[in-house]
Image (cartoon, rainbow, N blue to C red; front, side, top):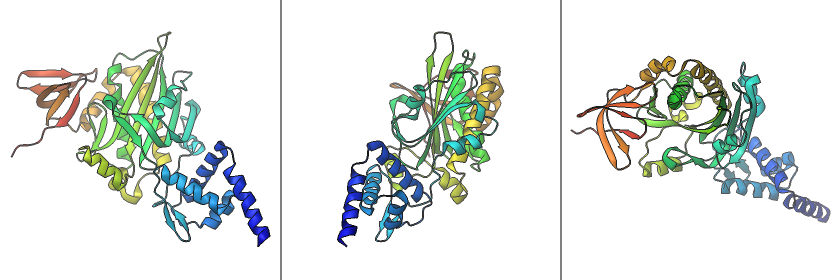
Length: 351
């Protein structure tokens, strides 16, 4: 017994004194083992990771401290449901036909912002792309300075870097093109009622499902580096739903829409990536005109009474479509007004 105890102590010392990078690797290995959603004994996990049970316990609590929901019972640990963890090799394989144009695919466990990460890894050649996905995003940015935080497993959090040789004439409508691409993919996955809400959100039956944030950096030679950030609610926890509801945000997620038939995250990210790359090339060649009719078909605000907030001003009218430069048209009591920015919401009906 003394021999076993001494061996365990030495193993424990080894586990606790491993370099930080090794500990991160152990953490991700542990998560991969738990990703099937089944119960795993601490003893079995320790054997698979070549660490002590005490080290497994520490890793589990480290993951919990990061917000992961891990169920612990006297005989083991498990995630609340199976997880399709991001895999760069699988993503490249699923992007058949576009894999040679993907300059880089980064699958990160956690990141401050996928947009920031892609910004620091610029695209080298027009027509190529850089893709980043993350399991956890801590400090993402949404529109109008809002935070865009993605807890583990609840959202698809991805950014695509793209290089335009020169900006298309209808460049200001780029977010609408991205909306069309994303809607195509989600409808193909079975979310048939998904539509676009000007300027960069996707809604399903009156609730937000996805959002887009685009950032640009101009180059001295006239080229433009684009970073397209996309967030899709995948399987929101009750606590996240409650927090969003407290902010008066009505949301839905893919699991609610599709149930257990929901497309895997790797497959969905790959489909979005391929559709985006195809649409961006088309947009560069022919502008927004080739997307306009489809965007209008998906428009969830069409002919609805809405209000547009611009700073302290509030404008009320009936949504009357968009222009080629991506501006919203509003039919007001004082005539048609054009908006290239603003916060838009459906106006509450009066009985």
